[in-house]
Length: 101
Figure (spheres, rainbow, N blue to C red):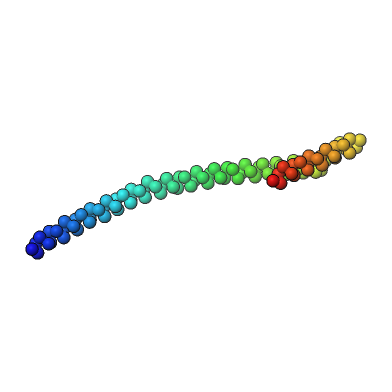
């Protein structure tokens, strides 16, 4: 009876070792595959966001330069200055309304 009990214990222990080995191998393979994939994806997202931030930065710079040139007005003839200043004020007002939203 003791020998049968020992054999049963050995079989159960062998089964447990096989199952834990399978789980360990699966975990290692998953980590080996998933960690580089996650790193690659995060690098891709970072690169895309960096590109978008640079684009927005250049766009804002261009808009500010345009607003600055409109605020300073046209340095041409004085006869047309009143008409041009009114146009520039309207353009500035329209641009400010468009980009304020």
